[in-house]
Image (cartoon, rainbow, N blue to C red; front, side, top):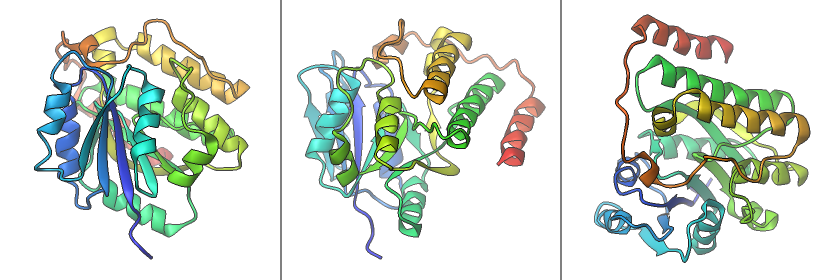
Length: 272
């Protein structure tokens, strides 16, 4: 079977500190994508320069500067410019595991899949971050079991022809565009496949900046709304896009015992 052509699409806004981590992880993949497209939302910092600085490490890299900042709008712009058979939408503060694309290619080759996501792992060793990620992964599994699946924004994979058929992301939404996309794909008969491996590292910066319960409440509330009503919120007060929100980064508090962290990892293994 021919190797799938993968386009990685990255919306960014004021991400000069985080985006290089993602681009470095892509450059270090055991399998390289067809192309990498960064869609900047008119950043006020050096995001565009930071992205273009990776041109030598990522020859396939293209940088598009959008006329406005909007997560669904920027994703759609990237998808329109993409040439691959598969669109991989990744948030600018995500980091891919070195084997991510190789494993993704193997999963694509193994069956008739058109819409894929995967588990994530936290970007720190604290018990709080491990617990937050565990809850989110369990919500993904709950969606599958209850036939109300949703794909998280940090890592969503959609076959290009399916993406075009569904009409892309809803650009009128300020929040929950990934959940809305899932609902529309399911209505078309496109099922979500979950790779039950940690293929990416999920940034916990929102939890560090806002505390555990405020962002977790937003994620859980929006997920439960999808599970029981098939609808999603169109906006979420206090949920702001962009790396500028996290410039004053709070230090990670390592007050949780290491054995508790190991227990959380064991829970994941026992459940799945």
